Length: 210
Picture 1 (cartoon, rainbow, N blue to C red):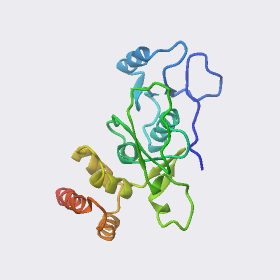
Picture 2: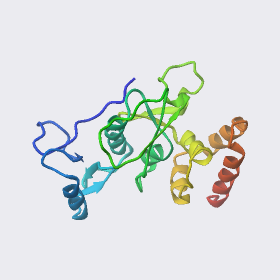
Picture 3: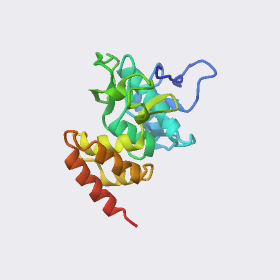
């Protein structure tokens, strides 16, 4: 199953293309998009992608932005994970790096972009098929394969190379089943880095306990 994409709105684009997704193109440079964002006509999406201000900020809208950016950066099958997946689920501050898992490493696209790329070779980057034991950790949101909130939380606490904003973790926690998180972390306690991740999860749950 391939990631799909919607057309990107540009000056002179064909009719029928969604008018709410903008990237630099012929007749429209990045500085002009930035100016439109400062005046409130657009809002910053991911990298050099912008969204019309009146477009609802939903997980599916953000997934379309991720799809466009991902197809410019990666060839072949990929799954949004870590901060990229977190942004799809919760919105808020866009990540400063595009993070995805792939079944095998690909040479990044040469299309210039201001967004760094971090790829991880892992099972969630593979095809959505049954019988592999991990397929429930990946879901489709709009056109993008994305790790589910619980898997995203696990990855952020166990694998993220940088500290994650506690506010972002609390927002993500709202999309998670706490019982599923505890069961998941207990079952996978053998994995490298999980002891520290379990400690961080307990701290997060204590801080958000009612």
